[in-house]
Length: 279
Image (cartoon, rainbow, N blue to C red; front, side):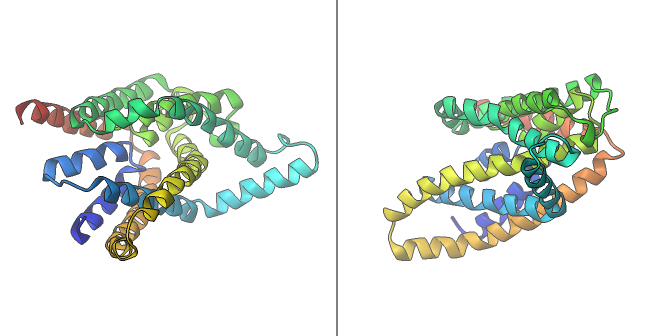
């Protein structure tokens, strides 16, 4: 992987991780469109690093929310009333929402890995993301705030996240749509989506780091150093663009629907499907 590829893919990851247009799908599509043949080992290490970068972006943007939630959970657990306060309840609901994707993701791992190798499949799933966003806009009443969420809402959003284990199905799109179909307003659905990504990213990053350690042991020290020097600019690009995309999207959703993202997914997904048959 070159320095230019690292920066471009870092920017792509940062933008698309939080916009409802699928980061995993774009990380399949961009190399396909540009004809990049990235070494599998390099791509894996880079994917792990930019996932960490976008996790840092979430922590940076939601640091105040995170600290308040964690403090409230601890205080009310000590008082033996873990669900007595809204912030404490939200913390438990965020953890609950991660269970469906965590369990089913492990069971479906092999199928997902096969899907990642296919730009055509990714294109079809992007069109699926568009349909999910359209359903959310039509079905949701958008009259529920984040502090009014209950365990059924959290579990429903968690099951929505299961769809996003396939490349092209946007994690943020599926979970925001899941929240909206439970009548959350758009900004509240987005905030829950981004906050629930923290335990998911931590768990996925932890597992990936174990694989990365095994991979690094089989690589030369000099090669590893050169790779890291190439990947650092991509890491920084992913963290910065991730933070900016969170900030922009939450502001955008206060006044605008999801239709523009649905149109984008249809256009890009359709183009990739057509190109896959023509090439």
